[in-house]
Length: 160
Image 1 (cartoon, rainbow, N blue to C red):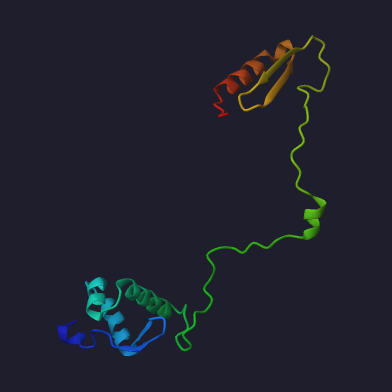
Image 2: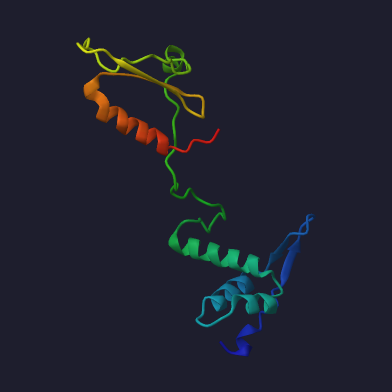
């Protein structure tokens, strides 16, 4: 674009609201956006020439691109619904919540084996730094299992 093509700059203010919001000439605004879409044109320099904030000009450019893509209705000037970037979550039935109240987990002791061993049991009790108690009852043939469990527990670094 030649410098003569910028005869519409700075943009003409058509209205200033009570809150200071300015409205600009539609034709000049359209030409400014078109000029910014040209290759090798600096939007910041065009904003300075038009005497508008560069962020505002970028917003106009985004709105223009959205209008071209069909996301915004130009006849009324209102935004139409765009596809959501997330899936809505719908709350389930209320009767499920009342029949399943939130309760803390129940601690149950689980036996290490369900059959009665024929050999005497060895009992190992340990209290971890985080307050958890571990009790193991093992037969002689469970030595490898106990060794693996003690080794695994010794490698756990639990903050207190």
